[in-house]
Length: 258
Image 1 (cartoon, rainbow, N blue to C red):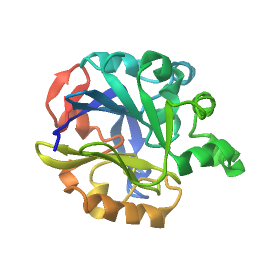
Image 2 (tube, rainbow, N blue to C red):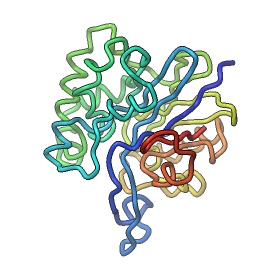
Image 3 (tube, one colour):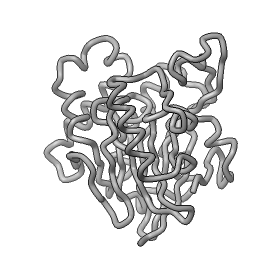
Image 4 (tube, rainbow, N blue to C red):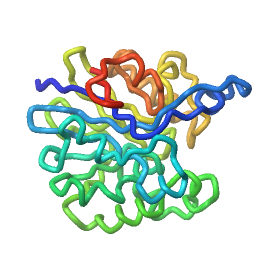
């Protein structure tokens, strides 16, 4: 079985948020630090990138603190156009899919993976145009994904699917309707890039998720599913500052998680 390495790449932040946004209604008066990340999974054949970050247009409009084009952050570990073969979009929120503005051109060899349920919700369901949903996505990213629908560069996934030996996409709804995580084999054991299934790692231990939820019951089932596949110390969340602070630094704002 192939062994992979997992890297967290901070491309923006740090930001201060109320704890209650990251931990379901806990600590409305307490502020905690968070970062924006993408992830890279390194194998013998190159890199699989998980998420694309915020697009440069939206980052400029938001005046996003500490922003660096995620493509440039990937280059710090040698994940360039010749070595990125797959890009997994965990969900279509602006800070995880907005980089579709740059990624198809930056990584011309890459195939992009999105859960079919996630794609259908954001591109065809009128509920996605309602204010709570519209506020957290990126229209430019959606337009790019739609433009790729008929191409061989976009793969719409139905549920769990192995995409390489030792690397499996896991349908993990709750944060969004068609959220997915990525399970891989590492030297430390089975590990999961869970992205925003939780914003901080502690959530996987005590079932207290972030405030940003589409389906809370589905999310609780997702936590059970992820914990059945990996120990909680090898399930990596979406925004935890500890991913930058508590792991070996291998390049500027890049740490090796496993």
